[in-house]
Length: 115
Image: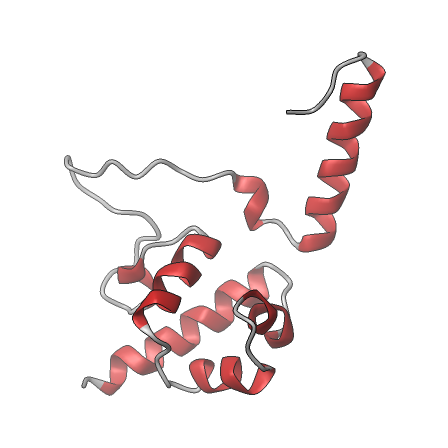
């Protein structure tokens, strides 16, 4: 296996985690794993393919991006049917909570129930 894939995966996972303001513990808890496991991933040990897919979904990037096969977060080309996910999911957890509270406030203010 090409070590550059392992290295790129680790670097990109760490960058995505940092961008979201997450700790290794936070990512580990998403998968019911220890911080040390996430540390191993960031040091170049690839997780199971299903976890790679779940990480790509969570961080709203492609598996090809995570594995260093492309520098683009989203698929390119005329056959791409990638629908951007909610950009709010890329915000730090604290900002996501604030957004949810504000949304709830607006609904209540106008007598509506959130969906």
